[in-house]
Every structure is written in C-alpha cells, then in structure tokens.
Length: 340
Image: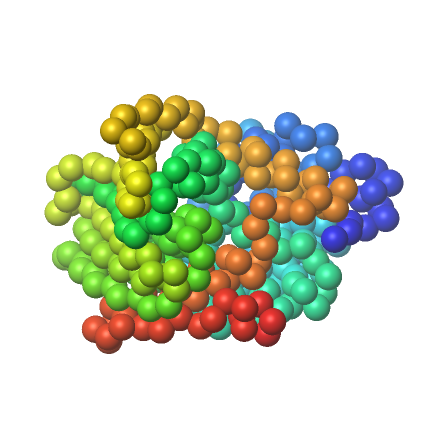
C-alpha cells in the first residue's frame, strides 16, 4: 500500500469524512490527535449539526459526499454514515483514486461489496472495513483461553437492547439500517474470526412496526453451522418489545466454558472458576485509526483484510436469504471467495 509523494513530503494525509454521528466524532478526534493526518472536509445530513461539527474539529463543510470524493486535495475518505450509503460512497471514492476507511458493513448488498473489494485491489488502494470488535479485550481473552476448553461444540452471542420508547432514527429504519445481521455483521465476524468457515445458516426474525418507515422493535435469531462441527447462535434484538438488556458471549467446550458479560468474564475449568478482566471498550476507534495510518505510511499489515470482511458479509447475506425463504442457506466457500 502507498500514499502519494505529496503526502509523504508533508508527512500527512488529507482526509474527508462522511458523517457527524458517534463514530464520526471518534474518528475526527483520532485524526486530530495524530500528526500524520489532517481532517480537511466533512459532509453530513443536518446543516446545523454539520456546521457545529466542522467548527469543533476545525474543518470545512462540503455540500454532498459526491462532491467530497472528487476533491483533489483529499487522500483518504472515512465513511461513518448510514449503512444504506456505505457501498455507493466507497465505490465512488475508490473510482476517484481515494483510499477508503469504512465502518461495517461495507455495503448492504453483497454483490456490490464484492465489486468494491475487486475495485480496490485493481486500483492498488487501501480499503479498510472497521471491525473493532476483534481489537477488544474480550476478543483477545477469547483467543487466549479457547485452548483451555478442549473441543468447542457450542457458542452463543446475545446482544439485546430494550428501548422505551424506541428512537425514531436511522438505526430503526429498514432502508437506512438494512437487514439486522448485515447491519450488525460484527456479531457474526467475531465468531468467524474465532472458529472459521460456516457451512449453513438458519435465521428467523420479526419486526414490530406501527408506521411505514420506522419500526419500534426487531428480534433476530441466527444459527450458524460451522465446517468444524461447531454450532453457533447469535441473537440480536432492540426496541420496545424487549425488557431486559443483555450483552453476553458464551463458549462451551468438552473441558470447560467461557462466559463474558459487558466488561468482565470467567473461565470455568477443572472444577474452578477464574475471573477475567477484559478492560474497557473505549479507545478502539483511536487504535483502529492509528493502525490505518501505520499501514498507509509504513506498510504495516492491518488486523483484517477486505476479503475477510466480505466473507462475513456473505454469511450475513445467507442469514437474510434464510429469514426471507424459511430455508437453510448454504454459504460460499471462503477460499473460492478470496481467489475470485
């Protein structure tokens, strides 16, 4: 991977940012705190909020993302906006010779995502899909203690977020947020990073909706059958029909188990229970941004490839197909995906 001679000479990459929400703020803070980056311009959906954002982070406002990606003074585009627009912005930015950093998912459409990965490779440009879930202390602890469990046969990952009332925002909108397992693809990616390829997927979901564009609740249960015989279950739910918040990750093996809830965990092994401190999830966007800049300037490999993210998106799309048809969906072989 490389950056332009001009960027190398000034020791900085010039950045354009799409979005003004939570993730965008964390990106802007990380970029401002790294001498190798200069946040030049942003674009947002709400004029007043965007103007305030630009003033706080010392950058200019651009009228549209279409205008942003064509600017000659930008090297990298960071995409931190509604899921619906991810694919279109990434494709346009790469077409105009920009490196791209994007929050998951890469696209709501798996074929478009595949085209984007191919485009980045052909242009020799950086395409990085953020998956900070595998940078967290929880994931590092999972990797460390898995060998203690012997043969793992079942894993369950639940994230349930009751909200009363549910907010009328993009993350409760079918078009802007997308199918739950595609929008929340990080849940699947954590399992795939730990346990490998998926053979088949079964998924069931339900929405509660009282107005056309926004729903009040969703509940989605996905079952993954891995090539190694492991059975995985991912539950994702949010909104007004849920009553108890939960963020729990369980791994069950023939010699022990791992259970993580929020910022703590425990290993149950050989008749004893050992507490595991996994630390805070704070600082992950800062870490991810630093790794991107390390990659651009020094060629340091990133912790995830676009092909790995694309494979997980294929699994999420299989969940969508299963939910819509009521049938078991087969997942494309990962090695074939990478070769293609």
